[in-house]
Each structure stands twice: as structure tokens, then as C-alpha cells.
Image (cartoon, rainbow over all chains, first blue to last red; front, side, top):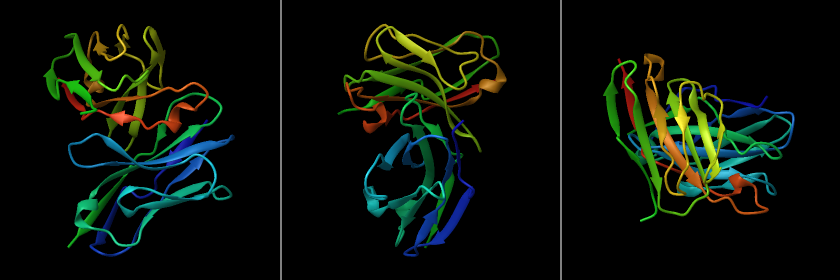
Length: 114
Length: 118
């Protein structure tokens, strides 16, 4: 069965510093991978997705993620964060050939300090 | 404005009192889904619907019912709520294009419904 692990429940970082949010998944088949962001008191918004092709995926708000098949990882990165990036970030996976559902990780709260 | 709406946004109720959380989308999406979000667990899918009159269980369907009589609406029904259903609930929708994997199409999420069952 597929699963998603986000090891860091909270990541504090200073404004303008780089950040990496880690995501590892397990699946016996090919997958699609996603990162969603949830701002306070709002629903989820898609940041970026990997479906196929280039393993480096660029998303909105300056975020990018790299798919590493051998390490089964899909870490999210941003070279310089802003206060407005403070939010909860969810990694999600879906198996390509089976169901249409997303399996979410437990989330990482990014806290950007001035 | 394209959106997914949920009502109510906040609800406090008591054990056993039937309730319905409504979800409506104005984007003509075929696919709709309900999730619950609990601390440390992320989002887990409750039920989903591929189209009108087509629904299926997600990972945590126990204690919930859904219906899809119209394309735009996908209500979540708790016939006899219990305290373990206290959670934050999200509805989501997306297009389902023939020949394209569903998740190639972005899922749009509603603002959430915070439910407390005493």
C-alpha cells in the first residue's frame, strides 16, 4: 500500500533563508506526486505536481521540487522564503494505474520569522 | 468566480443528532470528494464521486453517507455523529476528462467545515 511520510512536523526558518521540506513515499508502482499548501483558515491549494518528464518541477510562488525515484523522495524547496510563506504544506501521492485518490502526508508547518 | 463552497463553516453538535454538511461547486466538475483533516494525520478521503449517481468509499467511510443527485452538489451526511468524528472537513472537485488521469486535473478545495461533536 502506498504511504507518504513527512518527517518534519514543523520547520522554523528566518525570512530570506532557503528552505527544504522533506517528503518520502512508498509504493510498488509508478506514482504521481503533489505538494499542496494550506494557509491559515483556508482550503488546500496546489503548489506543484510531478506526473512525468523532467524530475525538477517548478510551481507557484517560487517553489520547486525534485522527484528522486531511487530515494523515493519528492522534497520541496525555495531559495528565499517570505513571511507570507508561513503555512502548512502537504505532500501527496497517487498511483498511476489504480484509484483516483490522493494519499496525503501528515503535513509540515513552515514558520517564517522576520 | 469559480469556487467550491461548504456550509456550515463551523458546527457544534451533540452525539447522535443527524447532520448534513453541504458542498457545491460551480465549475461543472465531474469528480467530487470529501476529506477529513486531523492533527498529525493529514487529509484522509472519506467518499468520492466520479459523476452523478456514482459514489465510492475512500479510506475512512465508516459513519458517513454521501449522495450525488446533481452534478454541482455532494452533501456529506452523518446519521449519528460521535465524538471521534470531530474534525475539519474539506470538499474538493475536479474535471474528469476522458483518456486523462484524473489527477492531471487540479483538485479545487473548499474552505473547510470545522465540526465538533460533544
